Image 1: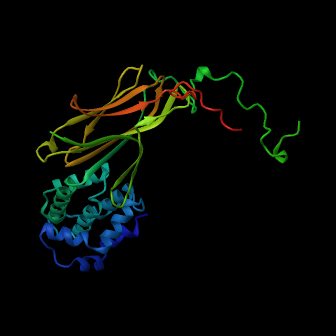
Image 2: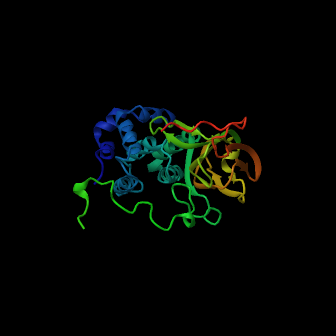
Image 3: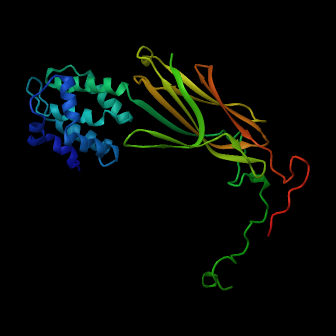
Length: 172
Length: 141
């Protein structure tokens, strides 16, 4: 099911709120200030709108694309690019680059906005967090207490369940 | 060539999703283990790079080298992303085994060239003996 935050981009109310189509840099600023785009950006950031949902949404609106005809959802593609421009993920990278590469005149607005977004994105830091294990061949298996597995006593440390309240103790 | 802004090793990193600010918590400098062998459960090496517009299209490899006393050096390579002017490389290394006291050196290389290092001192086990040779009184029961 497509999120309402995405569907909002297809409404006339959203189109009216943006007003006349400005040059790319000014239009991008206009979209950044739009409450609908800001709500969508927050939704993306906090996982309310997922990458799969966005993909599905883009697929849905692109079904209406007819070469040589005015494309009504151009602004929705541009708004989506602006909403995701600060988000660091493979999907966003792919979306912005693919959109910026398009040369079809029907998609001129969204492609030029995507290029603006890429310019803006260049100034933002990219966070790359990786979790790595120290190699096992060097680090023999340790327990959480820092003992090697081979150094563990043969008998388990806790052999009786005396610490449990009596009502939980199993009667033998 | 990318310029290293800072390099530090800490226990953990927190990222604020709204502001994109990061918090480095518990910077590792001195560790006083209760016994050896000791295990550092997690150490996060953070290196922040500034990349010129001309260099943003080129490939650069930042390598983290971990030198633990008594063990062979271990390398963790990472490619810096293209099309960015700044890059925060955060590498969390889990389960670093320490067999004896000494200095653990975390070194960062850019295309194989040394850029910075961070030293964590592993102190010997405190056996209760003061420097003057007088034994510390036993703890009260």
